[in-house]
Amino acid sequence: MGKGGMSHGNTDEGKEVNMAAWLLGINDIKILPFNLPPLGAHDARIRMKAVGICGSDVHYLKAMKLADFIVKEPMVIGHECAGIIEEVGAEVKHLLPGDRVAIEPGISCWRCNLCKDGRYNLCPEMKFFATPPIHGSLANQIVHPADLCFKLPENVSLEEGAMCEPLSVGVHACRRANVGPETNVLVMGAGPIGLVTMLAARAFGSPRIVIVDVDDHRLSVAKELGANQTVKVSTNSNDLRDEVERIKEAMGGGIDISFDCAGFSKTMSTALGATCSGGKVCLVGMGHTEMTVPLAPAAVR
Image (cartoon, rainbow, N blue to C red):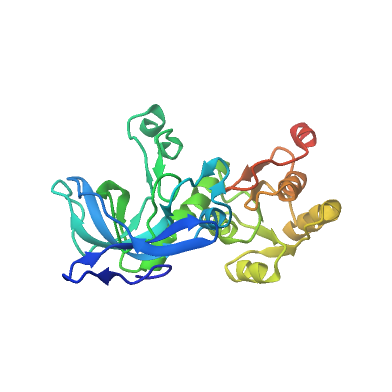
């Protein structure tokens, strides 16, 4: 397999054994057989070629839980993925063996009001890869609804296809905040989600983007990817007031929209303090379960 995967094995009879990365306990992952379900009429069997490692995978590895999601039994990890179609069900007309696809990892019910309104990501019956108790995609092969497999253009690699899932987080954030050519954007956090949010904001037309982090290397990557300015901050809350002023100075104008892609009390407080009156602050991704933030001053503005 490609990024993050492992080559498959074979039985003595020559039949392939489907292997996967199983999370068995804290800091305990083993490559073990993973039996596939039968191929349904509307399904596709995909050979995984690229699987990203998300922050949620790391949370489960280190603590066996993320927010209210708790791993109670062995689980296959991974959900940022792309691969090559091996087989399709009898009713699948838009895919053929050999097609390169990016995979939507969330299977919604397709029937509730949220799904019918196009907000399927909020479906209460969502079955999402590597979210307990649903198995993930860090395996040789998986079976998945064909409607959730999207063909990749020839100029998009399988590794880039796997990154469509985290990129969609940044795109969704920019849609929710209504980023456009008239909006200056602040991004708190230059990790993977902060970077894809920055890239999405640029694609949505934002003329000026400032990104903030505690790490010099991450900030240098953000600069290479197109940030207008970067600001290094500390983890010390006592520095917040000074850092807000430095961020405003780096922007050189009003901050219309801030994205907190780190999810700490300090990053959210910084975003609330730096954003102009009447602006927007969006929390992106899975931050800390609870935060202490200055809501009253924010409400006044």
